Length: 125
Image (tube, rainbow, N blue to C red; front, side, top):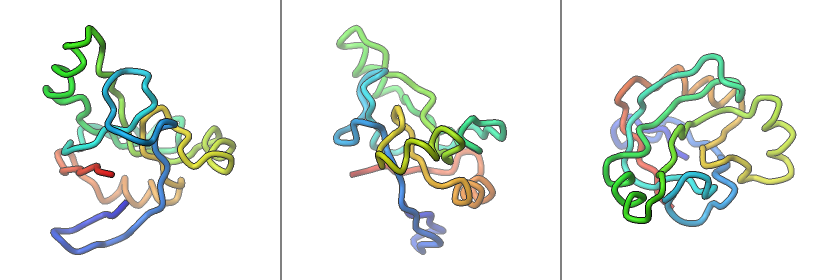
C-alpha cells in the first residue's frame, strides 16, 4: 500500500486484506476487499482495531451489481490497525479481515493523521 502526495510516494506499508483476497468484493460476507476508486468518508477513533478510516464502498455500481443477484453489496470497509484481535490473527494469517485493509497500529496512526474526508483511495490488485 502506498500513501501518495500527487505522484510522490510518501510512505509504503505492508498490509492484510479480506480472508478471500483474490478478486473484487461483490457481496456482503464474501471476505473480499473491494477494488476500484473510492473516497475516505469517515474516521473512527474508537475502533476495535485501534483506529479506522472508512471508504465509500459500496458505490452505485457495486450496489447495482449485487442487486442483479438479489444480494447486498456489503459495506463498512475500512483501513484499520490490528487492535487486540488483529494482534492474535495477523501473525497466523496475513489476510485476516472480513474485507478491510489492515496495517499495524502504529501505521494506522500515521494514515489516520494524514488523510482527510474525500481523499481518493484507489484499490487494485
